Length: 219
Ligand code: 5RP
Image (cartoon, rainbow, N blue to C red; front, top):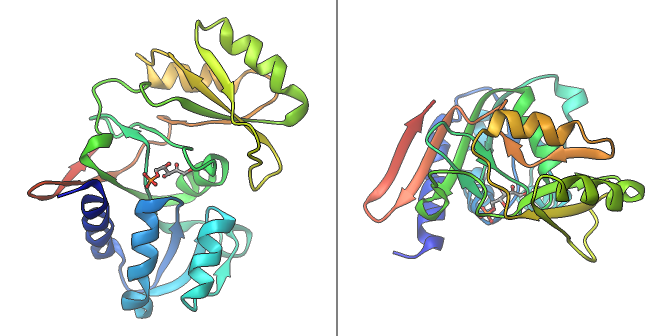
């Protein structure tokens, strides 16, 4: 079974978490795209949909969903999203698709966060995947210099602009032995909008698509 099938299976398993009357938050990425394909089948259980990116909004609208805003709905019942890496504490690296800021807001606003991944995303220690950091454009070089002091290698994601009009630094070679501490530390650099470590708000449930099916992990 390839990664695509594993992602599809994990996304399908997340449908069971959508209860009647759900205000649903939808993440971004190829795994979530499988979820969006399947959502019309559970339309009657969804009261409202909020999206973490323009890309997901476009796909949702193409399937006939009216996408509302977090400001309109207040908190959301369930947030479903993928990840670039996950550890056994359900702490994550996210932002490979550049949507990390809105993803972090929706995860924080969600009563429950279900993360859907294929088994290649499970790691012992976060940080092999280059850590995305969204920065405001005028602070990009300043933030990069601060990140160099952590003995990491920030690389500007050239030509990419986030939905918020900002830039992304992908931080290579960062040893994230303490995700909570590192999330706080990078967040405190002036000019950083969001760091792609999701440790203070980790997932509640991790659905891992593998060779033999979908494994459910809980915090
Ligand atoms: C987007 C993300 C995605 O969840 C992450 O990149 C995983 O993507 P995929 O499902 O395509 O592997 O954080 O900003």
